[in-house]
Image (tube, rainbow, N blue to C red; front, side, top):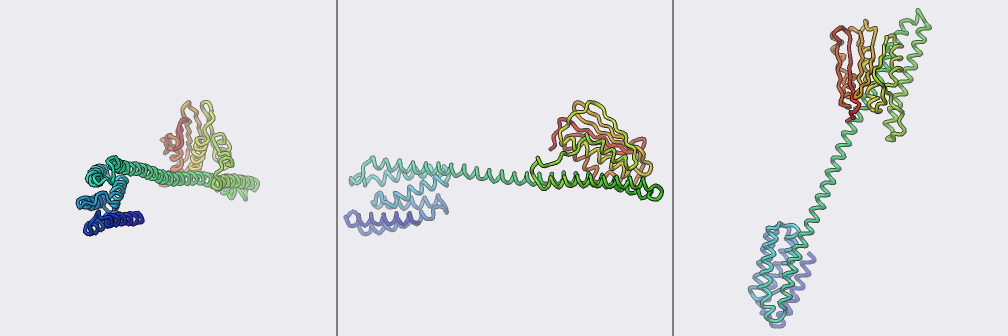
Amino acid sequence: MAVAVLVFAYDLLFLVVMLVGGEFTPLMFMTALVLSLVICVLYLLRYRSLPWIFAGVFTAAAVQVAIGIGLAPASVVMLGLMLYAIGSWGAWRLLIPAVVLTAGWTVLAGVPVVRDDRARVGEIGMLMLAYVLVALVGRLLRGRRERFEALQARAEQLTRERDAQAVIAAAEERTRIAREIHDIVSHSLGTMVVMADGAAQTATADPVQAGAAMERVRDTGRDAMNEMRRMLGVLRTADPTGRSPQPGLGEVDRLVAEVRATGLRVDVSTAGVPVQLPSGLDLAAFRIVQEALTNARKHGGPLLSLAKVSVTYRPDAVELTVTDDGREPAAVAAGAGGGHGLVGMRERVDAYGGSLRAGPRPGGGYEVHATLPLGGGAG
C-alpha cells in the first residue's frame, strides 16, 4: 500500500510539472492521471491473479505511451515491481513473455523521451537491463524460498517420524516390561503357592518341614520383591549405569534350586563350550527357561515328577530344551499354551531371529525347544 501511494504521488508531481511546462494538454494530464491510478490500484491486487493483473498494468502503460506520455513514473516503477512479483511467484512461461513485452514497451516509450532529449539511448538500455535483473532477482529469491520451505517440510517430516518412532519404542518398552513382570510374578508366585500348599499339608504331621517350606516361601517372596524393585528402578530412571545386572544363564542353577524346593526333580545338563552371551540374549535365554519350568509346574498335573533342562552352546547359536513328564487332561493342556507365558517366550525368540517349538511330547509330557542365534540382534 505505501509503495503504491508513494509511486502515485511521485507520478502526480511529474504530470503536474509536465502540464505546467506545456508538455501535456489538460486532457492528456487527466487521462494519464487516471491510467496511473489504475496501474497503482492494480498493483495492490497483484497476488489475486498475476497474469491478468500484469496484463492490466501493461495495457494501461501501453495506453499512456499511445497518447504520448512516454516513460511515466507509475508505469516504469510498477512494471518493474510486477516483473519482480512474477519472478517470485509465477512460472517461467509467464515471466519470459512479461520481460519481452516490458522490454518492447520500454523501447516504444523511450522514443519520444530520447527525441525530446530528456534521456539518452544508454539510459533506456539501462532501464531494460534493470527490468531483466529485477525479474531474475525475483526468480532467485523464489528458489531460495522454495529450498527453505522444502527444508522446513523435511524438518516437520523428521519430527513426525521421530514422534512415531518414540511411540513405537514406548510400545516395545511397555511390552518388554510387561513380559519381564509376567515372568517374575508368574514364576515367583507359582513357586510360593506350591511351597505354601506343601507346608499346609505337612503342618500337622511335620511342623519342622512345614516351617522350612515357609522359610523358602519367604525367601522366594523377597527375591521376587527385589526383582520388582529392580524393574521399577528401570522405569524411574533413564540412566543405564544405575540398573542392576539382569539375570542370565549363569543363574539357572539358582532358578533350578527354587523349583526343586517345591518338590519337583529337575535335571540340568550343559553341552558345548559356554561363551559370554550379550546381556539381552542372556536375559532372554534365562527367561525362556524360567517360563518353561513355571509352565511345567503349573500344567504338569499330578503325575509330574521330573523336568529336564538342557543348554547346548553351538558356534552360531544357543539351544535351550526344557522337557517334563507331566500328563495333564487334554482340556487343560490345550488351554495352557494360550497364555502370556508362551507368547512372551515367542516374542523373546523372535526378537533375536531364533525359533521356538513348544508342544506335547510323543511319549507324554511337554517340551519347549528354543534356538537363539548368537549373531542375532534384538529388533
